[in-house]
Length: 380
Image (cartoon, rainbow, N blue to C red; front, side, top):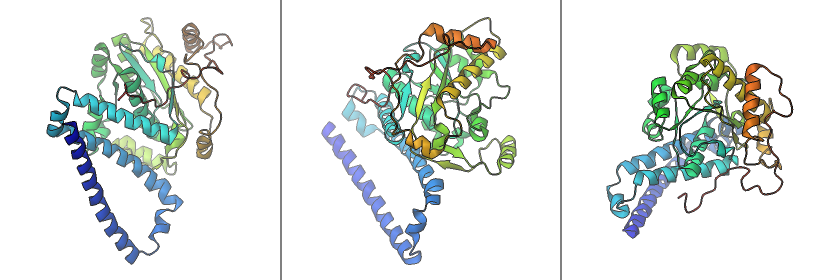
């Protein structure tokens, strides 16, 4: 049966390529006749930056949704796999695709994967870049290395994008409310939230947190009695960002419509590295306001530590070719120092050299220093 499945997939790919080739040939002939210099326009830096690179990512998302669509109509595939879990196969396939994309295009790495629990609930709080592609990569890595699905709280508008709502839901994303976050945490799942949300994605400047007075994530963590794990991705705003011209007008439109109407640019192959901080344990003595303040200071400290201010896109691309120091698999010197430092930040105490969270440089075995896309037979 596997032989027939391979033949079926091969025929489908051949038919699709023939279909695309036929229509592309027609389009090229039309452009050659009516717009002789169309290649100069198409490959100009302006078109590549503002249209081609962003559209490539959109195409990638829709290809993922297309595979999900095929799996919904899997009658001929079930005969080949019999008792195998096809949805599990889809998840592993997509995780490998996204992990591979991050590894090739951004040299994507994860530092501190050991801070993600193998079992039990956790609430991940992260900085929201202009386009959260780093979270897509992180979801893939957590699934490949931990076998766990990280549920993500997304804005309502994301579920109104034609063709992608089912893909987001399949991977565990949901729009809220807080009670649902608490339910998932009580069920022992991992949930991720960007408190700044779309507002932070649109209007954050130089990696500033745009949380305003939001305390929902802190209330959810307190209600579910779970630890909070801070997460930040280096150079996520060099990969994608929004045009700053007319920001006041776009902000006024967003506050009225809740639609992100600012023009985006990017898709640059910059170095991206996600840092997963030490868990901030549940503390019943903290109020939601105090917990928000504590998490905010820890995340801001991570941003100051790992992100060069006002870095250009060119320098972020050069980061891929620089010799970086190897980080030990332990995110901080030890868990005690990490917790002491976060408490000191919360209390406004000046950090000494002994309790400041630092990375251990490892010049020896670097196999555990970072977690990039390592795909072996077991993960597939």
